[in-house]
Image (cartoon, rainbow, N blue to C red; front, side, top):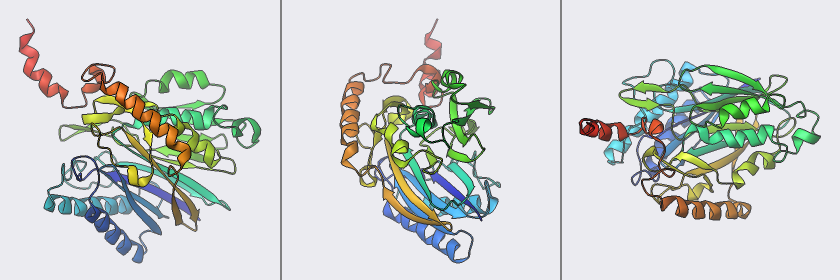
Length: 361
């Protein structure tokens, strides 16, 4: 039986400001998904949040981009938005940029990552969820997980992984995709994905075609005057038995690399790996956070989650992230803390520049 694992997220109201999600929004989502489970529309679900993003994790047998599943998620977000408006939460419904659902939730504001696979004898997966960052945040970790032998020993000693992996890289401006094979085309891959806001890893496959990882990245679309497909990404990674081991998947996050998306989406900061209960970005609305939920998939059931960053082994990464945050914050509105002008096009900065345009003579 093929199982589909769907992770669908949206910011539909912050509590307080952009720091967290109110428990009533989570309760609303759990109630509606429980009803859908009772009707047989889904096999299992888990609801969580990172920062101000509500995360729906679903298993079902309907395949990728299924209209009923996406409509279910849209309905959950709409119902939770009504609660957010009642509580006057900040930015209530801000990720629901379309007036109505139109067959597929992709491109309407919420982020989506989905994989379909035949269950193995044991099928562990890790779902990474981030806040105050952009989809390019996954480029470096995905490269290290699936192409760097200094991170992933299995690339050297596991015969199933030794042939390498194929990366699908999306040009977010044109929507075109390139397939690049490693290790033989590693330098070509790095040429692209080092530009983390332009070329972003969408999928990773084993050389035999088996899906290994998928991220919530899509072509940038302008809807209701806002760009969507650019914020607070999710990532699904399969582990063990021909895929990287759990520890190899987590290892890149021991280094808090710089990502765009801190404060108003316009500043660089370190991606801090945190346990679920610390996913509350507050200092300058940050620094950016990432959580890791581990599940065993058993007949479509979500066995878990394990809070994988709730481990003192990541204390040094958190400490380093705080040191980096202190350093970056001293730069104030100057680059390289603030992103460059080409990336500020996707923030509110153009409205300020419009006011000043006639001052240039």
